[in-house]
Amino acid sequence: MTQPNKPINRRDFLRDGLWGACFAGLAGTGAVLASKSSQQRFVWQIDPAKCTACGNCATFCVLQESAVKCVHAYQMCGYCDLCTGYYRPEPSALDTAAENQLCPRGAIIRTYVEDPYFQYTIDESLCNGCGKCVKGCAAFGNGSLFLQVRHDLCVNCNECAIAAACPAQAFKRVPADKPYLLKGQG
Image 1 (cartoon, one colour):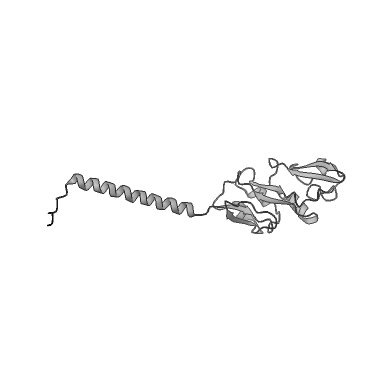
Image 2 (tube, rainbow, N blue to C red):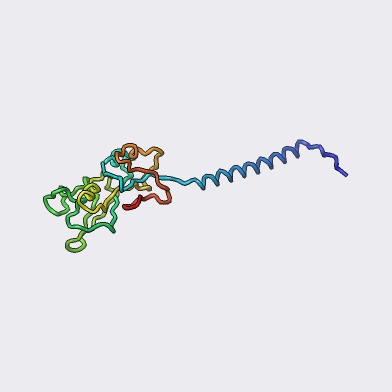
């Protein structure tokens, strides 16, 4: 025995329609959240194998003070008395006088360890990313100084001005979960 179709009144129609809209909205929100969580975020970084330390990082960053800073790979450093990343070529003396230092802002701090070894530390608040120390270290040293984008400073522009100006095309997008490239990595 079949039941006659019960007529649908306006109240039932609106209630059922509202429930259907809620379920569709929840499903749509879930789909959007799932797609966003599966998308990988990328950030700008300098490939140290390609970087030529041209100086553009100091002048082309959209920030007043560049987000690019010098990094020191201590495991590679020889702690030399005559560091070519610290001293100007042919310094008048091997002391910490400003006229002997290669860095125009005095961002590299030289600390005596034991004869003939010195430790070199980068004061990132003074570093402007000019790359002069990196160029000196690569030319005559072991390349333990290199430039990196500091992500706590970088605004992660969609189109990085430094990347556009980089003659070596050393800027590239890397996954945000592995934002730093070290020497020997690509």
